[in-house]
Length: 198
Image (cartoon, rainbow, N blue to C red; front, side):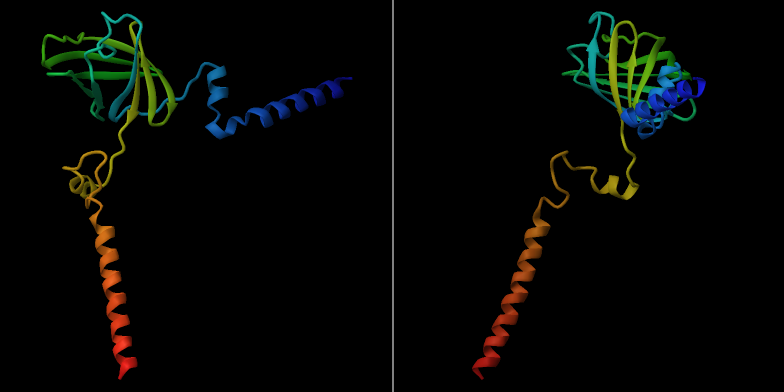
């Protein structure tokens, strides 16, 4: 009797594993079930993808007048916040500490447009949705962040003046290349015609 119960238990575990395949997301579902969510490094530049305001008067990012924003967390424990408004920009610098799934930003000093004050101390819970995607939440707002990929310095330099939807060569290289190939083919055809006529 005991052996058959053990067999049924293993069968159910196997079916559950086959159904949910927890290894595909590095066992994140199992970690979450035991209250141990994934922890990734916050170091890097993050852009605000989306915000949800719970209380629009108290949130510092999820406001109607914030067009875009970015966070930069350094290895040394400093944080830089940049929020772009229709006519101005608000920036803040301070320090941060990560404790598990919570980030505490302290000693934030607002610069730029000081009419949009940022509190000097902010605690936010982190919900990782991938190594480069995180949702930072507190009682007033949820901020969806995506880590900017650091490209090679040469590529960054070459693309510095480009708009987001513009090609590096303005799309001219392909046309020029077709022109060179076409001219080469025409020249080869003309030389064949001359050789055949003689």
